[in-house]
Length: 392
Image 1 (cartoon, rainbow, N blue to C red):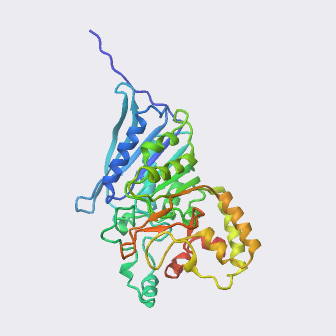
Image 2: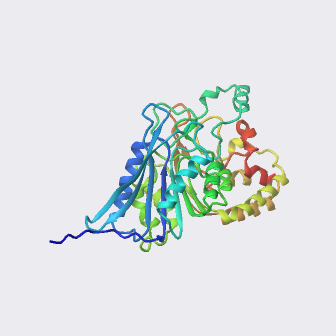
Image 3: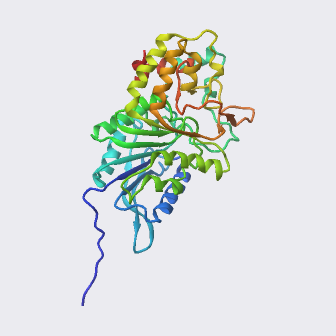
């Protein structure tokens, strides 16, 4: 009598681990679709010994307790397809809201299970760029002085399509500084971070994350609810048997999907090289010292959401139009091109914000990254960003 038991051997340290964190519960329908598309891509046998770990939050069942599940996605040669292995279920209580300690705990859990030579991080969630989850009280007072109702800021049109908009609620959102702090505590640096979330392609967020990743992939505008097309782009995240990646093709693959296959033709993305951000801040400091050109109007600068007042403007367009010294502006553009190494967009972007049934907005200038400089209603909070402090 004999028995054969098949044992799957894991390498002590994989060539690459891709960590996917799906944050918040309002997008769970789309998150499940994203996982299914990842499995579809992995079924092509592209993974090698690379590890794909997915942490997804489920719901809070009407209580303060939230439950989440950690999965490993892997190719099963016996079945001839990729499978989703459940690693762990756990409960957590965000009594004080999501913060650095909460992100740190989740990240440590994954790193301990899936050590690797290099790491990538995908964050799927709602997003609002650098804007703090608890803006200062000055914001509401300023809007009222402008004759605007604070309740209308970031209010979605009820007939709009789903986008990965502002977070579920204040307690289930992170500030970018909290994420950066949690990564630093784990003593790792990601090869790249992909934000599958709205408005994360802004210079304030990128600068806050500059020390925890080599590259950042982010969208200046809203990301549609479906998110990134993982069935298309996983092949670029796991090249050469899972040992390497092609970040430019991840970006172009995202936009090409929305150009050619998606119903809603809206996608903007750019690749930021973090090692160039310090020099970009210095170039921006020179721009600020040069002063503002006579006759400049923010109304003429490319914006990336449909609301009034706007919160995100094209950084390159703003500098080109506003800088009083043409030589300084040209030097800034040169450095910006070193910093933003890939940029792609559709002809228009879709925004769920704004009224009068206008959802599509033209893109007439595209540097690939936004800023909230000169945005009056966020001026107080903006002056607390690391980007402001580095450029003034």
